Amino acid sequence: MKIVFMGTPDFAVGCLKRLYEDGHDIAGVFTQPDKPKGRKQILTAPPVKEEAQRLGLTVYQPNSMRDGTAMKIIEELNPDLIAVVAFGKILPKEILDFPKYGCINVHGSLLPKYRGAAPIQWSVINGDAETGVTTMYMDEGIDTGDMLMTSKTPIGINETAGEVFDRLADMGAELLSRTVKAAAKGTLIKTPQEHDKSTYASILTKKMCPIDWNKSALTVHNLVRGLQPWPVATSVFKDKVLKIHETRLSDKIGGKPGEILKNGDEIFVACGDGKCVELMQVQLEGKKRMSAEEFFRGHPIKNGDMLN
Image (cartoon, one colour):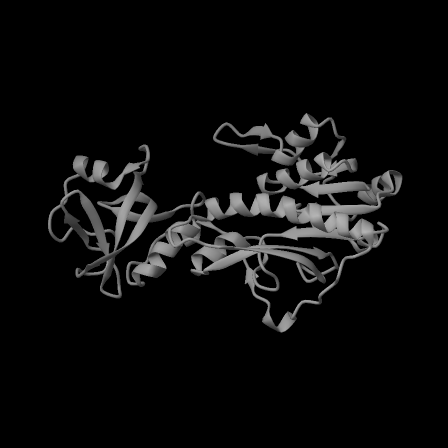
């Protein structure tokens, strides 16, 4: 099948690679423009562009999908299908309606739950026991099109959003492969979403990072997992920002919310429900990431010391 692929981040790379390996004719790859990154603001290509170039595919990076430029390219490429995975731009109706087999999207949730920009992270932050990927036909809404196929996976109690992200990326590639094959055979079954059951997963921001120790231990633990690897949960230790990279739930009880409690080499922080989380990996501002045991060996604590 002749396919135009649209995607930008790491999550989409496996999908592009799988379609290529399946033997489809990848007529072109659309991705976001290169952007400056890091302290030195070095212009950096999106991961999808790097993979497309490795595969010898033609890359397009229009600044807008609505000014007619992208549509002209689509008309020239004349694809049978457009596959879209975390592209980051809204497609106008003229592009959505162009391909014979439509525009098929891979989304990192079990729709209609968690439409929007950060479905994987929010599934972890909210403590969901299960998530998955969904393929769907695209329409003019945000993740509102008819569903085609789904694949589910459990979320472990200590899994981070980053770990779930990697697994769903692999699952998404497999699901897209199956979906495209079914489209070619004419065997796809469309299932309209139950729109009244939809939820929205807003983009993550650094405003979410500070931990409220008045919350329950489970809520704190889920926030730490869900903000890993970015933007990372934080607290304040002796007037300095302390990133909390990893925690564990604990049977230990007692202490005021935010109070640091030591038990041998184990470091706990009391939460609002009377339970504690154990600190596993932390990072003081300007320092490297390390185990909580190693950190507090170099920063001795006394009774009543707090994280704020």
